Length: 445
Ligand code: MEV
Image (tube, rainbow, N blue to C red; front, side, top):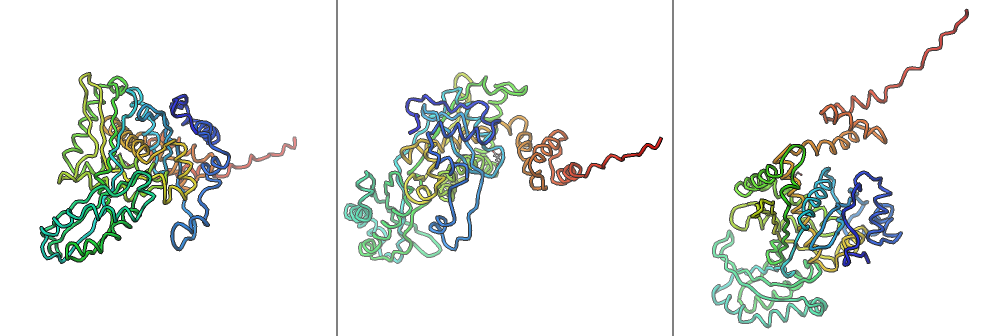
């Protein structure tokens, strides 16, 4: 077990960025007490093979790899955390680590979650009397919850299970009026899609009998607005100063940038995409369903009726920067790919989480950190300076560079301020041009 509780290990791994992969792996392995087999999985030498992949989905022909990295500096609820993130985009890991360092100076991230309750929906059509049907469903609540619980006795034994029923009438839809029954199910440490869908299907015949209607869809809702995670951080204003920008100037710029997203859906979509850069990368590393999390996040961002920012940024009485993020996070640490994918298992071990709620708290903190990093750059020198520096390597690879050529070409393009594939190709051609043999001129004298 990693020694998170005593906080004897610090996630503040100075210089991690400049080490080689072997040294980084060694640090993470020590930090999380990984076995040799787990290290092999982390490095990609072992991990998801086609045999196991074939058990996960249909028509498998291979596997698809993405980079896995560790974001450093995170403190979440007083505990140091190293965060495994799986993503193809440069700057995300550097941004998260930098923002976590800023938040660390203010005590790190405070995060919380509501109960892990998911909503299952039953669509009831052709109901003769909608109001009477609503009352009848609510009157039969106890019976229906018991029926739902019969579908998953293990979940009930673990302290989860059916919690509540809600009924809603949709008066006007393209298919006419309909009744919607919501089953609220506490999924504990599972994401819960299977448990919810099974329970909804089990309830359908009784719901038809009680309402006199016809049940059509029986499926969970990805607008998991009863399964929320919140993260909060305070960054001391002086810590925000960098490269000639005062802390005051950066803090003001970040609040102004947030105000733009708060007021404009076009900006909010990009602002929230930045949050999801961090969220999705941890969700993927831990084998969770990132499409479900994406769907929930964006639907929640529009829950006021207008699509807006998932985060808020402001100042406290001392002028320090205060950020908050609230979003649905339907995550599991048992079942599905979290258990089957070997790398997801190692990622969960590195995170040292014991519950799905702890995982959601870390993910919310990473989302807020990612947002802070993006707004800090956007409100000052712009996003391209840092981004292009890292992006240059990918441009060099795409142009055909290999080995040492990659960093040499990237460095030259960065120095010139031209990061483009045509420039990478011409530098590469120049570097590979054969050097003419020195001519030996015979001296007959
Ligand atoms: C790029 O992947 C993410 C950003 O566009 C987020 C933002 O604009 O806030 C930089």
